[in-house]
Length: 84
Length: 208
Image (cartoon, rainbow over all chains, first blue to last red; front, side, top):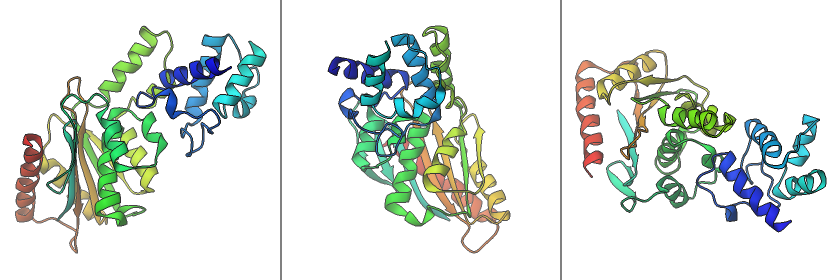
């Protein structure tokens, strides 16, 4: 699980063009969409959908699930573990 | 009247003629270094393209340290210009779909230069007018001319910026705040003085 979280952080940085950041800058439980976390927005949610499909072969059938799935690295990793 | 100015480039940040933060030659992540040095708490900075990052850092210098009262000011107009539009990000976006196989939405949103003024307006709650021009080079007279229009329409302040990212290291942001004082028009004599003053200021920063 820890390896998956590290991979996810690296993929988030690359996919979202967060070139300034390192994986150490992203906390496992930080809310990615709040200003206390990474301040991501709906455009970035689209990137997550692409990321899950291209890297993990997971298609999100119901986009309304995204809010909970993409909340943090922890929630993303749990969803991938459960569905891949 | 020129109220304040600042300059952001890979050699450091400067405000009102003084060095604020010097950077080492060839520092790769210099925009993040300037962000960290200013202790700005705004995670969205890391998502921005370099054009927006430079304008953000310049505006923060003025809004946080020199003139905090410009925040939430509806009588302030933004007049921005550069010569390369958003070409740096445009090329990255092209690469994302031609070579990486996926058109990146997070790059696509920065494929217009006026996204810069939107980012700053969100950050500082500016609901007034803004405009972004593409010019061949910095021309102080052009900014003064546009500022005159802004003042005639009732704006009291004009935040002007020459902010350019190019394909080489000569990226720069020269940002200056002009005030109408108690006049709705800048006189011809005053325009000539301001032209000389602004041209001297940017040249001094470039030669620093």
